Length: 298
Image (cartoon, rainbow, N blue to C red; front, side):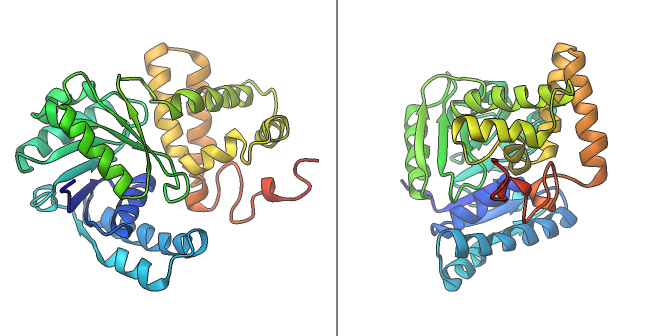
């Protein structure tokens, strides 16, 4: 596996984690985002991950500092991919935004660069032609908090070259992931095929006013022994992502329940700056959410 230089396009919650984990494992990483203001936020977001690695992985200060120093930041796409062996795209879950991005990327990246989408709900075949190199394109999907939840789902589309597929599997292992190959396209891969129906069901219970988020989470945690309930998971995923996915479902299906849910997420959470764990408040307040209270499950 001859990858050395990795570009991560998109510096949101997961893009930042992918960048830092890749750098932590010794690769040179370029982070691209749309403008200098967003890049400034990315630097802060990635710097904050150092503390999590010190706590959760018992990494040393020297290790996390070296990892951060392997990361370069760019608001110019062409400059960010000059030497890229692999570009991992982690931009918003909106088809047109991704199509436009791949059309630009295909023109400026070296011919041998492999492209991977981290999309959690969209299929690589939806963008394969836009890349201009469908045989060198596939999906590489991570779970949130990747340094702990270290799954990497590698999914090819019908046109992906087998050697490219194998190289990306090797790369996933090289950055400390458990590599999970998917041989056929599946919306939501394995993890989200299991998780999304749970999160949808929980949000429908909320929108139908059956119960509040804490009661729904408590039911799931007591009944299954799970460490987190669905609303605690949504706080980790980020409420903007949940909103984008719900809004797309509302538009696609015309289902009034999804429309109502999208409106609820926007007005009661996003508009009030409650974006989940990242901003310190979502369905719960952090760093001491109620579900960690010893009496929560009583």
